[in-house]
Length: 227
Image (cartoon, rainbow, N blue to C red):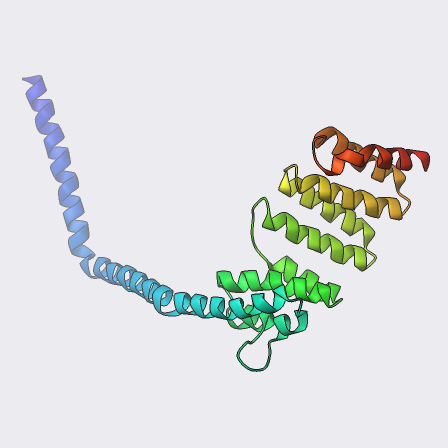
């Protein structure tokens, strides 16, 4: 009998909750309907923006990119960067006119390469900093280009740190020893033989089977001799 009473009490509680929910919906029906409409409109707007704005801009940007890559391949850095005044607007304009697209992001890296080869190292750095990617190949190479910019600007401390960052980011036997050697070369050129020696030893210890490590002993001996 007690079990029957407990069951009835539980049913009453459930019914009470359901009634309260129904009452809440009834009292707030207009507000709920408005919220649902807003959600639907926002979703529809996002779909519209994506398919009728972003995707066409992305495609148009990549069409421009194709022309720029041709100039880049032929070392026509000024044309690649600034356009030809006819059927190609240049990487610089792609970055500005097609912002928030993947193509514009890639164009920033290309623009940085162009500015670097034109000797405009500060401008190149700005483009490289704006390039957003996180992988084990492209990202380390962009960091490496930034290190080159710093080195050419006489900012050797930044150059060494950036080359080391590129090596750590790559974390592979191909790129890491290469960038560690670049960092060591800059350190040695600045007379910081202890830093250079540390980097050369890191190559020998961590990347012994790499191509860079084949002749690393002579660099170690040279740095040791100057300490």
